[in-house]
Image 1 (cartoon, rainbow, N blue to C red):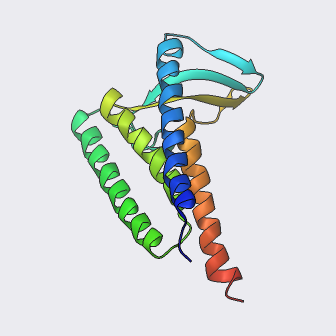
Image 2 (cartoon, helix red, strand yellow):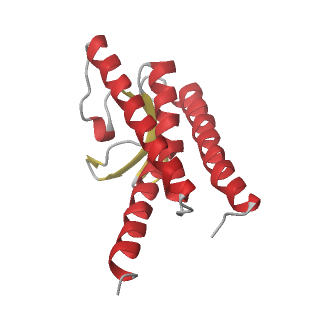
Length: 163
C-alpha cells in the first residue's frame, strides 16, 4: 500500500504542529511562570510551575557538571538520529509511522530546550496532597503517547494479526 500525499502530509505536519505547540507553551512558561515561588493552581491536584530539568525523564541523570550534561545531550541527539533513520526505513516499507513521528517531535523539542536553555522546561505539575508527580511538558506527552502507540502497533502486528 502506497501512502497518499495527504497521508504523508499528515505524518509530517501534525508532529511539526506538536513541536511548535510545545515550544510556544514553554515560551509562556518561561515568561510567566519561571519566577521564584510562582505557581498557578488550576484546580486541586494540578498546577503550573516552571522548572528546568537538566536530566532526562523524571529528572534522572540530572548532572550539575556541564561536561556530563553536554555528553548526555550528544547521546540524546544520536539516539534521535538513529530513531529517525529507523522511522525513515519503516516509512519506505509503508509502515504506519505516526507514533514514531510523535516521539521524534517530542524528543526534538526537548533537545532544542537542552541546547537553548541548558535544560528542558517542564511546567505541568500534577499532585496529590504533598506528593508531586514529576513535572513535565507537551513534548513529554507526545513521547509517551508515541511510545505506547508504537508498542501497541508492534503488539498488534506481531501477535494479534499473526493469528
